[in-house]
Length: 178
Length: 263
Image (tube, each protein chain N blue to C red):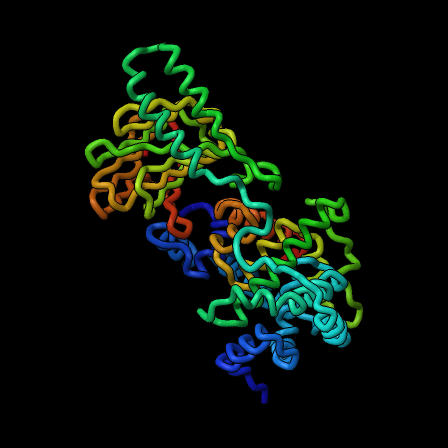
């Protein structure tokens, strides 16, 4: 049976990690690392980038917690931080010319031959999305953010977020051929 | 609804984000359309599979690397709020300047063709912001050029009138906690001609882009017109939408522009 972390413990652990406890940070990592990694992987489309984001989030967490107000779920707050770090990484790579804005990802980034065929096809289809579209698709459809929240994270309008989502679905329909 | 709703609309319907007449139309369509019900189920499957297929566990060696970096007192500032790019310049000062210019413009309006009026229009149009991010082509975004006009209500009433807009202009309206009526024009709409009079702002010849109107919640009465036809009215807290194909997205009402002045 899977047990869920007690959210009140998250608050206590966050306070301890903010005060410098490495043990508390380790426990937060044990609880939330997979979720943070998944957000980063979905947004960057790269295992290497996702690993880097995961590290950066937890290295910077003690200081970031100084700005954390215990309103709502710690897990949700942490995932939002992970999303922001991932998006910043994408933008920085684009500025350096390492990742063209609207060109498709390398298909190999998300490939994993030992996965079920259906999952492989899905990863290939997601990898075919331009970064700008994949970010909105992931944030809206998988992570459950509103268009307004996505607009805030991406620095675009809600209308643009909706447009990108619509275009993402068009690409996915073409790639997955229902 | 004769046309099939697109996937984005189906997703908004499933998520409960579609409201009012738009929701009822989509629900009626789905009752009778097998193809759209299949498409809707397919989108659910895609989201479910995408979530499962993209959740690899964290790498086993990640914690040891994190621990090393923390022990070295590595300083790292994470973005915990706000947009993920450099913030756009604040519009507060610009809005105050525009307000002052618009007030002066109202006085100048009494003199057709006056040099003062021409100068003011050029100055108002110069309040353009753009960020360093370029969106995909054709997208109405805050990242495209934007002009904001602020209209003081005259005796608690305001009218925003569009004249001869192109079919592609996106007109959005919402009621917000603002003190003055705001009109944000984005994309090609920034090139439209704007005239002001007491409690009235007229936008002529918008060829595209987006016109977003933010009505102050405290405004007693307001009206949005397109080529003389009334598309929306506000009386106190009551907002009445008269445009036939109006839709909503979050707090915004989307008013499709129809040629010939028919709402």
